[in-house]
Image 1 (cartoon, rainbow, N blue to C red):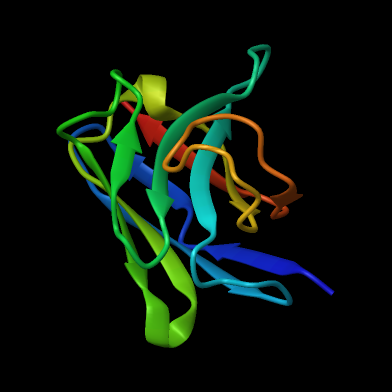
Image 2 (image 1 turned 135 degrees about the vertical axis):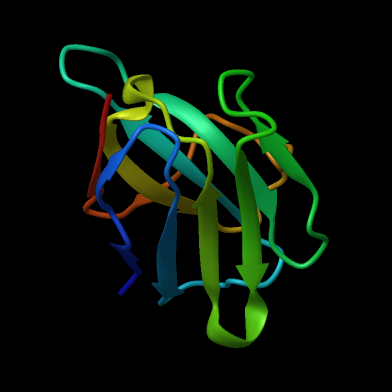
Amino acid sequence: QVQLVESGGGSVQAGGSLRLSCAASGYTYSGSCMGWFRQAAGKEREGVAGIYIGGGATAYAGSVKGRFTISQDNAKTTVYLQMNNLEPEDTAMYYCAADPPRGLDCPRLYDYKYWGQGTQVTVSS
């Protein structure tokens, strides 16, 4: 059974930092593609960052590039999203996503098979 368990969300003031974690289990982790997405109230879900597990290549949405960093800890099968210099516009539910190796490009910010339950991030001005 695939499980993606997110943690680390919370409330911060603008300019602050948070680190999200996503612990993965139940599928072929090595060589998979993982990513972080977010959905703000009344808006569509958008891809934030992606990483190729093992190789380490990463991709970011333009709105977070230079402020967010996605990383992996393969020993723990965990992916992190370090978020610095947070802005009120970053307020959203953040979701971890994973996709086993199936021949698609990776890293990428679309088309994932497995999803976590989400963790809320709220940034106040």
